[in-house]
Length: 239
Length: 211
Image 1 (cartoon, rainbow over the protein chains, first blue to last red):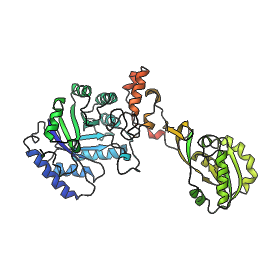
Image 2: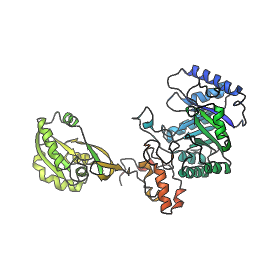
Image 3: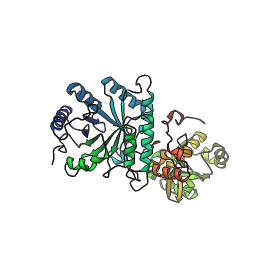
Image 4: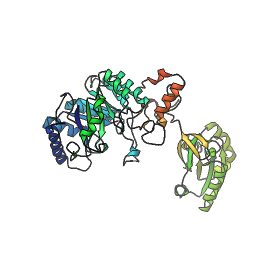
């Protein structure tokens, strides 16, 4: 099972120092005998998430071009309408970045920007539909590996997964909610030969990462995404 | 019913600063039901204005000030007073305020804040169930509007953040997609559970669109 770190670009840190520290972290993870082994080279080494911080596309570009790191770009439907999303997708295309991971996004009321107007112009299924049909001759239908973040704790999640499979979603990322996800959802995704990951927040891991992995080892996941708080995270090394 | 809330009288006073002779128009429909523009509130507004040193030239409650046909009929009762009136405080939703402003061609001041199309549970307890979003999908959702009731307005939900059966944002409330699922099961409309909704066409719901 591959371990992949995910991080949001920060708000107030210096870009170069952040990038430098991130590389150190990735090197440390790669050298770790337990988590460093890359079982599948098609998977990204890191996921960079756009939230409140500086433009994550810049960092994706630099990681790819300057450090040869396979990077995935994660973004939400909360902040951008379909025009702005298209602009990002065209940028990704030009940068040669193929792996995108989309989620609906935490509502502004649950962030520090409570008075912000949420966009949610389209939902992730809507974006998936548009992408898999091809967009305005600029984005062919098979250009991106389209990853969708989902919940897996209720029967309605299963319905959403079915629809996402139907439109051609390439991989699924289950948002870990302190309890193991519904096994029927996992089975369904795997039976459709889709890649499946669990996204776990660093803070949800109480003991060592190894102990946590043991609790999910039997789920048949292709990997675990560890969403780290910052680039100085010790989640990969603490015992 | 369209829900309104009373505006702070200070704001109304500020908007009327340069006007002396003021009329007050109430709405005997929605604003009356939510106690922001009925005859009692019209009287209250008259008192406020007089306390501010204004001369109230007339007060009237119009059945539906948003309906030009009704407005045209009712406004005749204060035709003479209106001539000497400098500004009119309207206790109705924004549609009523603008309809009256356009009709009388005088300064209008809104006495309420417009909220949403509301279901009335009791007086003082209202719920938003419909956002008037142009293309109604209630026939496919078991009769609950996911656009209005989901804080993210999703069509193909739920989002990844919901906690079991509950909403991510309003944690003590059931996720509307769970409710929709239960209703579709109840009505044996399982086919609709698999319906994929296309992205909304906002080109059809811009506010200047005329039906």
